[in-house]
Length: 151
Image (cartoon, one colour):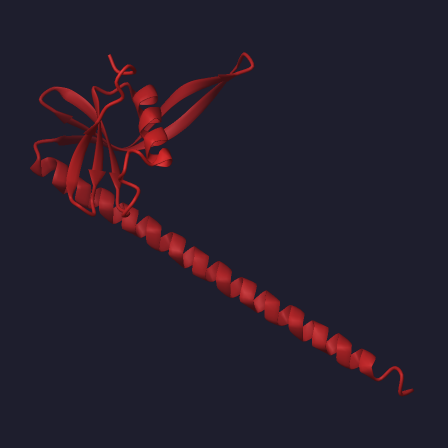
C-alpha cells in the first residue's frame, strides 16, 4: 500500500469506533430515562393507592379510580372532544369531588400551571361539587376552588 493511503483505514476504524461509542452512550441514556420514567409511574401508583386510605380516614368514600371524562374544545368552529382521566372520584356528605393525587415536591402547588390547568379541566369535564388536591408528600387534602367558574 502506498504511504499516502495507509492513514485512511486507520481513520475509518477510528470513526467507526467513535460511532459505536456514541451509539452505546445513547442506548445507555435511553435506558436511564426509561427507568426514571418507570420509577415515576410506580411512585404515582403508590401515591394513588395510599391516597385512598388518607381520603377514607377523612370520611371520603372512593367511588371510582382513573375515571374517564371528556369535554369539547372548539377550534375555528370545529368541535374536538378531549378525553382525560381523573385519579379518583370521591364522595362525602352527598357531595361528589374529583381528587387529584400528587406525589412530588412541587406538583401539589395549585399555582403551578400544569396542576392548575389539570384541575380546571376536571372542573369542566366532570362538573363535580368540588376539587381536592391530595398532597401525598405532606399527607394533606386541600379543597381547591375557582371563584367565578363554579356554580
